[in-house]
Image (cartoon, rainbow, N blue to C red; front, top):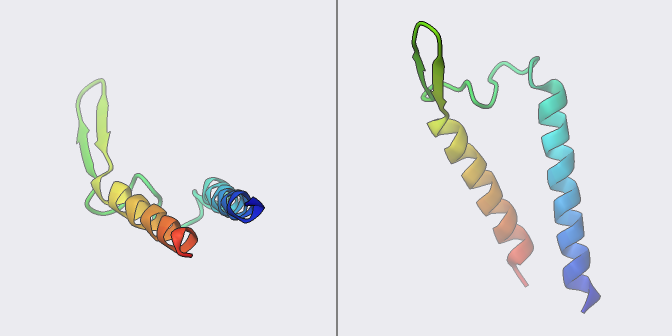
Length: 73
């Protein structure tokens, strides 16, 4: 019974560590999330519109992998 909650907490902890590292080291990485090749950027005179297509795909694959790894029994 407690194993499922424990695994969930461990997964959330790992996820928080990874997100924290990305936020902390984000400016120093060669490819930044939200500014990857394939992300759509439309710049106007007074505004900019960002649609991070590739970033969304990478985050989706990473989260799917985590759910798959921790969802196996």
